[in-house]
Every structure is written in C-alpha cells, then in structure tokens.
Length: 118
Image (spheres, rainbow, N blue to C red):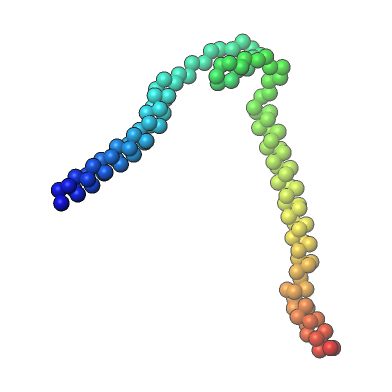
C-alpha cells in the first residue's frame, strides 16, 4: 500500500513539475521582454518617417492630416449608407410585388380554380 502511494505521489509531482515548466517558460519570456522593452523615441527631422524598429527611416513626399482622412471617410460612409438605404427600399419594393399575390390569398384561389378546371 505504501509503495502504491509513493508511486502515485511521484507521478503527481512529475506531472506537476512538467506542467509548471511548460507554463513558466513563456511567462518568463514575456516578463523579461516587457521588462527590457524601452520606448525611446528619437525626434525626426521634418519630412521623414520611421517605423517602430527605427531601421526604416525614409523621406516622405506627402504628409496627410488624419483629420482630412477622417472627414473623407465619414463622407464616404454617409454616401454608402444612403446607397444601401436606397437599395434596401428598392429590394423591399421588388419583394413586396413578388410576394403580394400570396399574401392576399389570390394564389390560393387561382390554384383552386385551376385544379377544378381539370
């Protein structure tokens, strides 16, 4: 009985150790990466852009204001909304014309009369 308990305890400790090792490795990596990460930004001369790695400094020919883009896209979305509403109302009209005979019961009456003729 004691040997069986020792084996179960040994397997439990081994599985727990392996699980903690597997979990601790990525946690340690993320912790060390966050600790050593620095956000030191260097001021750039006017007309140049750079990415976060600071390895891709380039001259830019055009600098666009985000406010202009925001206004452009908001107008674009408004026009798209109007088009969708217009298309939706047209589709609704088309579907209503297609479905209206069935809604009024005419289709049932037409089917009855056509079956009575046979």
